[in-house]
Amino acid sequence: MLLSVIRLYTSHVTEISCIKGCLNFDPSSGIPPLWTSLPPEHWTRHHVCDWLQYCCDSYKLDAAYISFSHFNVLGVQLCSMTKEDFTEAAGICGQHLYSILQDIRTNGEAEGDTEGGSACLMWILIILGMQSSHLWEFLRDLLLSSEDTSGILDWEDQEQGIFRVVKSEALAQMWGKRKHNDRMNYEKLSRALRHYYKTGILERVDRRLVYKFGKNSYGWH
DNA sequence: AATTGTTTTCCTGGTT
DNA sequence: AAACCAGGAAAACAAT
Figure (spheres, rainbow, N blue to C red):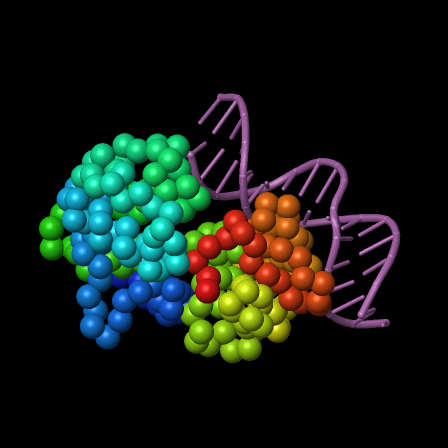
């Protein structure tokens, strides 16, 4: 178990450095948020609160939409809340919170090692698990990482969520690598992006290689 | 095991 | 001519 984690870790250091920009903690201090030391089922109210705070900061969720009284609960209760419960408690933010929580739960459970003393490993696993698998999240995290995207993808106007693909084929290669698909190219990647127009994840910008995050995406800014 | 949502693949035709 | 953009159709995959 330990070895596989280490192996997983070393094979993903570059990805970690890519996404750490969107996570709100200072790697030099090495202190992960409180809640990462336990599986959600065992969180206290305080952990839940801490996690909420973390989500608001990291994903730029507007706290004004969140009814905090609905979240004054223990981890077990939080875990038993349905997607509808989350929606009731926090609208669209609730849906995001719900999927973030489910992410943490499934990735934590999969490893089956939650005993004390492994806080740091849990932290690594959670970070790895947070590598979002969706294309738009991949782009968002790349943009947010601000480091060595080496002119492949850049903000045009971050306030408005407008970004430009600078090296289209290089970007496609990165995406292909993430998906273990060496047949990926920009032609296909861009088709996937165009599917996002109808779901509001992206909005059309009528300029070549320029895209804009839509109302159903979050976490950029 | 079935359903639904997302991504990939391929394609035809149009634009810069 | 090369690189993009628009979407339809359908297959493949992933998540639930």
